[in-house]
Amino acid sequence: MPMRKFALPLLFVLLLGCRTDDDPQASLEAAVQQLQDNLQAKKTAAVLDQLHSEFLAQQANDRDWAKRTMTLLFLRHNNVKVLALSKASVIDVTYRDKGYTDAQVALTGAEGLIPDSAGHFSVKLEWWQDEGEWKLARVEWE
Image (cartoon, rainbow, N blue to C red; front, top):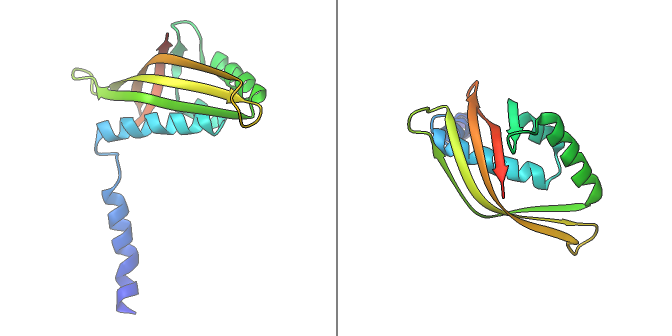
């Protein structure tokens, strides 16, 4: 009985110790991973929650464009895979509320098990901290 009494508080302390809130770099990397997971799981609403209110893609496309594009992609393909071949994130040394991610990404889409479309992209993401959360503000790709 005494062990159970301390087990829950100890677990709580351990979980708090693993939080990334105090480490901006770890929190940025977690946001990048969450974006990849949300895209692959086809969670449009979750992706939109990660976008900053001033989001722009390719310097011209806004959040509405992102929503329409995801909807079309997710309807067209039953299976979507987002493979980060490489990714590196850094916090801006001058503006600590900005972070950047450079990634090489392979996207595949499939009606069934075998991909029927694929592409390789060099992606640059700019993240802004908004009320303690990293939000995707800018994205460009080649």
